[in-house]
Length: 371
Image 1: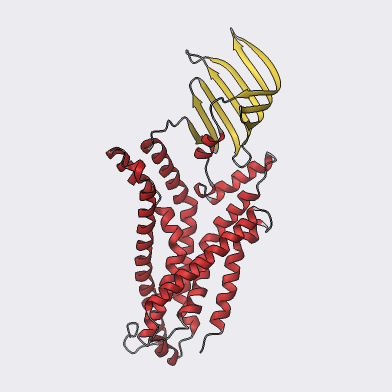
Image 2: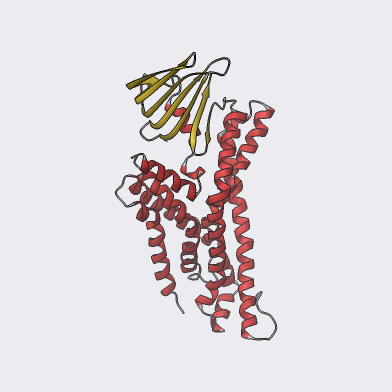
């Protein structure tokens, strides 16, 4: 067998076995990840092909915007590719009679799983770090390149220090919080600047609500600056930000996938302080935390399925089982998150429900394996 070395201590043989399994896992995993990444890359490119082919510049920046999404694509496929790797590896070992030989030598299922769990733990750490540092950065750059460089949009709306800034004509606006679900703002400041860059007017509003005619500013204070004097007026309601619908802010506003875990927690805290609903964002936060640990769940599912099949089993069945298990997990997880968004399930439970359920099924499957 590929793992067996010369006669020596049992500890040496165990290390050889671990290295053999890790090497096989890595080889299959990288192949599956490359195929998955290529598939998503092609789909993303052809979805926007009409926009990308307007000019050579648009094509070049279009490819760049898709490449910026690479960390997101790779991380998205990690659990499925890992599951396929486990299934295919164990089936290949079964076809070579390696599983039978190992069990005959007294190697337990736990010994087989030790390197697999180690690999899954490393994947979970990498996924967690990617979600926190690399993916938010790359997705923001991908969105900027696509909107500004490819589509030619004017970047008059941007984000700095978790706040939205608007510069349109001689108006500069700062928005502390934007609730895209209800089309509301909190902490809005409008500043009008003259041609000589002097301050002409400032409006501070505690809240703004979008209506068909425009933004309605509530509890607003207006200050006009003339000849060194300040005229102050208080309005229960007034208007502002003409020609800037909520869709503009929804495009530039960071989605949960564009925030790291710490950044999303800070954003939720600010929403709570402002008295806004945070239910949906809590689900997204816990989902971010739970996603890397799906790789640990895949060990249980992959082992429970992969070690049940014998030498006569075709490898294509392992691929089919992996894709089917991944699809079942995706359906369960999406359904659970939907119940969390609807506040039927608690946010924490909805994010971990599918992982807990499949972990239980995988554990039962491993315990009922034929010894």
